Amino acid sequence: MKKFLLLFLIPLISYSQSEYPQDYFRDPLDITLVLSGTFAELRSSHFHSGLDIKTQRKVGLKVYTAAEGYVSRIKISHYGYGKALYITHPNGYTSVYAHLQKFSDRLEKYIKECQYDKESFEVEVFPSPDELPISTDEVIAYSGNTGGSGGPHLHFEIRDNQERPINPMLFGIDVKDTKQPFVSGVYAYPKDENAIINGKNERVPLRLIPQKTGDYEVEKITAYGNVGFGVTSYDKQDLAPNNNGVSNIQTFFNGNKSLEIDFKRFSFSETKHIKRLIDYEYFKTKRSRIQKLFIQKNNPLSLYKDAYDNGYITIEDSTSSVYKVRIQDYKGNETWVNIPINGKKELLDKQSQEQDISNKSLIYSDQSTTLQSGNVTVNFYENTVYDDTMIDFKVSSDTLHLHEDQIPLQKNFYINYDLSNYKSEHLDKVFIARLYGYYKKPSYVSTKRKGNTLSAGSKTFGIYTLAMDTVAPTIEPVNFQDKKWLSKYRYLKVKIEDELSGISKYRATINGKWILMEYDYKTNMLMHDFNDNIVKDTRNELKIIVTDNVGNSSTFEAIFFRK
Image (cartoon, rainbow, N blue to C red):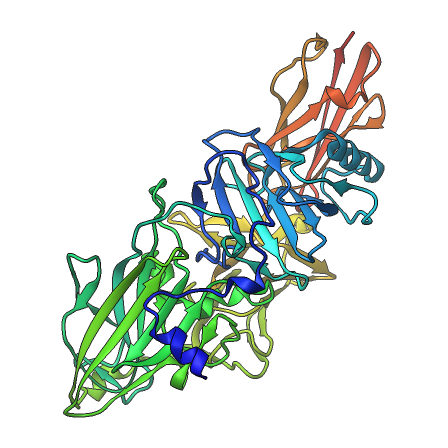
């Protein structure tokens, strides 16, 4: 306890470095590290699990192992991390390198043998410790833009022996940062119907007054009852203009610590609960993430520390109080927000607080709920929603109106369409789609068929309908024509697209033999590298078959020549 009190009195947070080895891991690139994304940064549906390191807007930079070890996993996928490499080290930690362009020669040879053996671009393998040893300072890959990357960069992680990602900066990976975090919004929240903030029983935006020091004052508020607060805050590093995530937030009420949120480590099993940390409804309507400085029920996040009364404060009538927020980045740069509070009990207009709940359905958080109308059934299993929730539910013809995407969900609900009375000669081409955007464009939702029932799971409220796709994918050569000589070409490039349900699978052969074609969904490009040395004949017959998500298939055939 004495040690805790001593640390508490120190103005800057000082992470205990003793539990994390220093000077063990080197930088994965040999350029000055500049970040486009920080650890635990708030993303749309998860916490960012590593550092996104800029690669000077280009691909092909040498990626070095952070320390000696062995390759314990290689995963190549169309989406997500794209080409990713995992190296386990003697100290028990694992470093991860993602969105790679390609691997080093010996690793590339190893994984291509796996791909040709499985006849699949997407593979995941777990080499034994003695298969692919990695030495200190070895070049293991080259940076890229594969998978779900939004631009060239290296995603770098360090995980512990329980596969939990940890902020790499705790291990001495350093980035220049002398700038304070900044705050763009502060909000007050009533805990229950008895709480009042500036005469209201709802989320209330507070007026920020920036100070010359970089801190903030908030215009005095009046409040009564149990109240929580939220902030919209970001950090910037010295060498980049990006708005990045902060590292630590602490709150104090009348000088006593109320809550701490420490973003130094989390588990992948909890990352989806970012929806419980942020104000999800505000994010979906305003595209801004308010970090709630209080803990609501069914919030399993391990980021919280020293939570007194779950971060809520109690304001009594005729009192004067102060609520403070300290926001820090990893380097200890800090920003304070000062909120003076005048305790005042006011009467609310109860009538104005009432909500119209006609034509709404109640979804329970602790039990299963089934909604049914016409030929549509929607199943919500236990713990799908965080709170008991009233939602809009209406079926019109084949269109399901299922509230709006403003309520956070823990897991999928399931939509079922009964097609027993559905008349169509192309019934096998029907799928469940979500309508999105201004023009309500249908987007394929992974659909399963069992008899006359179509089923799909989703974690997003919105408008769903039945759609039909009878048009096969298109296949178009990019850098060659039929009967063309390709002796001087390194790559064979083909563009594939499907307008409605999307690409499900593809297969390419040359002279009847399967060839590896890498697929980049962002550019709709298939590409074969002739350096694989699969093509050895002069005259070659290329055949590509592409299938969409409802089974429509297209075949492309061409002949080319090589010396």
